[in-house]
Image 1 (cartoon, protein in one colour):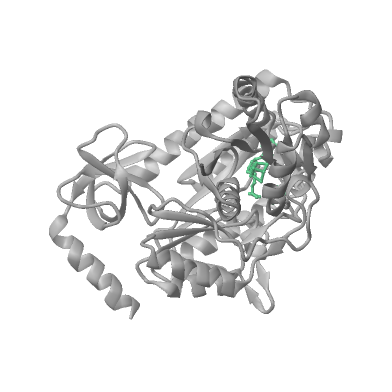
Image 2 (cartoon, rainbow, N blue to C red):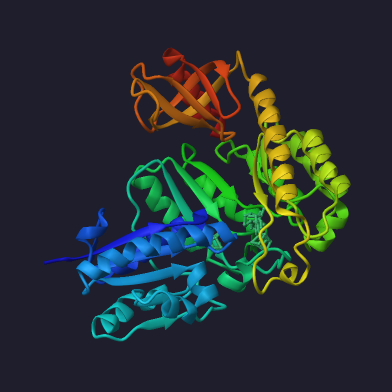
Length: 449
Ligand code: SAH
Ligand code: SF4
Ligand code: F3S
């Protein structure tokens, strides 16, 4: 009987993409994917270390895996990803039911290590590589609308709070031709959107090509394929990149641009390598070049020594920019990082209060930004049924806004014009203007030549 592998994924989109790589590797070794854990011969968890609570969730889940191992001792349990890299031997020692600990650059060895584990040999493979990009591995993707695609691995920025450079190693890029070929294959298979991933995509390099070159090559594969990307570091965002986004209709008008703090002293302590002035100028340039662009960000509350006045600077910056969305985090000290050696001196209750102020403010701003869209018609890519109402579709605009509207004939994967008549901070609601869809999509192609 065919062996089966079950895998759960935590953390960022790069882990989602890595899970598909791992499934590709396991499938080439003769495994099928198991949808349920209790049918699997190999149970894997792809983990995240970015904040303490991310790790706590995984430890909780590993507790559940103990029961599986008890009832079926022949099952191989493996921990993959950033926690494997960070905790290494500690994981096998503290979690006796774990057979394998495999870091992000060692996935090619997975089938062999599983075989060894079957013979009773626990395995730890956590070497980080300067060259591994898995360029030749075909990820096993489930059919759908969007495909994640890592264009680079690792990070060289060493922001002082961040564990990623330690768990993912040095920055390295996949080949441009390999990426473009993969995107062609995805378009042929009916994917409607690709998201190019990297911790700092702006430092992508392949021989003479930079990220702007990569984006325009990918955009030219198929004009009806949406192209998204994340994450952009504010220091490295070039004019050429901004112009490239503006110059291609199918490169989405949405940029995730983490600011982290509105205080220059905090940014220096975080080693973010830009100032708030640089950031604000960049936002002006982006808005001046890409009409209707939507911006999101990441913010950390309560970094070591952050004062009330500095917290207010973050609030002021958020008000000034008016982000469409923000991911907000309470500072969490991570071992090995530079900030680990700073005293984590902002009391927990102050961190929580600051975080809530940031969240509340963002909710108000998101609502205000969305209200501006009432009365307009937006092109929506239908992604699936609304979770709340089976008679509605759910999709996204090019600016990454979620739109819910009555089904009215359209199908998943269609581009539909929707007039927006109601919004909240997270979602736009409207009616499809089905007669115009065709025209809209047609003009879309005509303009693209
Ligand atoms: N490469 C991306 C972000 C990766 S981690 C970038 O540079 O933007 C995603 C977000 O998690 C970060 O932007 C930061 O806001 C947050 N984060 C990372 N480490 C953290 C920590 N130790 N405590 C709290 N938030 C953290
Ligand atoms: Fe972490 Fe900074 Fe690299 Fe982002 S750019 S992954 S925050 S070190
Ligand atoms: Fe987490 Fe690793 Fe991604 S720490 S955020 S899974 S790179």
